[in-house]
Length: 96
Image 1: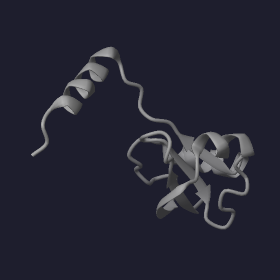
Image 2: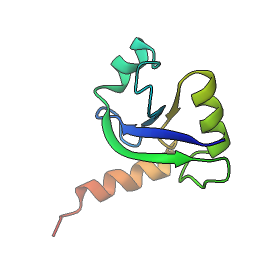
Image 3: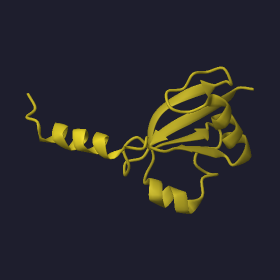
Image 4: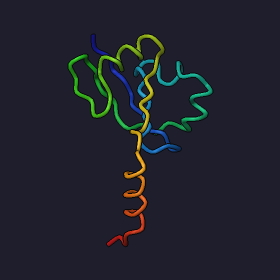
């Protein structure tokens, strides 16, 4: 099984991505999700196979979701309190 899909990032939430089949676009994404996601920003087009390594998603789960519901939503990684503190500290550092 191979699927050609477009990957979009959310302009509203860092590290949130939406995978859709190329031929369908966002037509199968529920309106409520589209409103929460914001206007999708195209990142790349990719051929996904079950063997393909993806950065933060399981290719087989992505394929299954695309076939069953027409989209796959990749949520941002969860941050614990320590990681939030580091991110806050880093944002206060001078940029050079």
